[in-house]
Amino acid sequence: MVLERPSSPVRRSVLRSRVMPSLKELPPRRPEPPAPEDSVVRWERIDIDRYEVRLRGMIVGYIDVVGAVFVALAGSRYDRAVEVLQTLDFATAVGSISPVDDAEAG
Image (cartoon, rainbow, N blue to C red; front, top):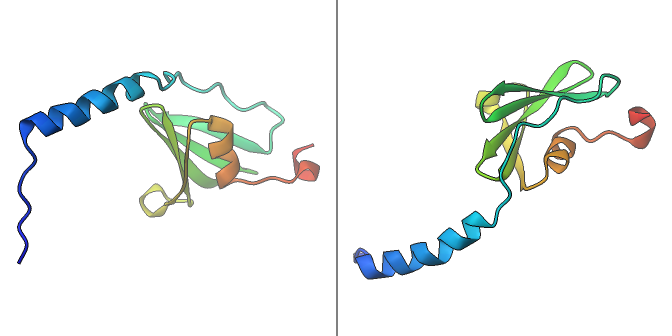
């Protein structure tokens, strides 16, 4: 049997000091503006850190905002939705849940 020794407080503080500056470099998040009125894909902010994405009126997924990252979840029910992508770009997150051809979008 192998037992892991807890890391020392010095090692933890060294790791924390390396991570903290990189977290500060991430862009701050503000609420996304609503989708255009004529858009096939629409999203609505349903919680302080969650968007519901609809395609032609049907729920196709959710986007959770975790810090500066958008986590795209595909599925009509949040409790059963599956993570499909993590990205820093909201439009990319929406597109990963509800891909629309150029013919449909226009």
